[in-house]
Length: 113
Length: 108
Image (cartoon, rainbow over all chains, first blue to last red; front, side):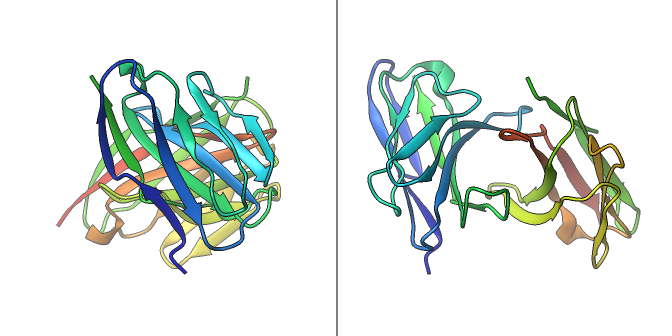
């Protein structure tokens, strides 16, 4: 199993550009989520999904969209990038929506100029 | 809304000394998780505590969940250089909220 994979590893965007961060898991996990990590602020939940076709907002959803068309994939879309979205983004998955072990991907480091 | 506070922000110890990080929630939690993140890496799940007053041990690591289920601690006995990293707690109520983390450095 590859676990949780994320692409790209690094990305530089200009203000106003859009892009999609990819996340995939091969563990048949129901629950997937996106976090952003900023210095001194820990990880903050952006969006999450409890299964294919179901998504919901987390703590900091503004400026981001998600969809879950398959169990495996959970892409995160930045509609119009802003410097405030410069961060490290982690995707995570767990077997069910019940609180249990979350497996994190390697992260995407995003810089918005 | 729910807030999870973690102290200290940084801790530098001599190898062999003990280390403790504390986590406090503004609301009662259904459970709490602990993660470790090595520099440049991703968070790795360590443990989950569910019951009031629960204590769990993993070798030199001891995890506690408070009686009121609003606070938790992670204690490392006799730190080693391999313990270096940032330790996060994550409290779950309606959703998962992470503490800001405690960054541990260990001097050989």
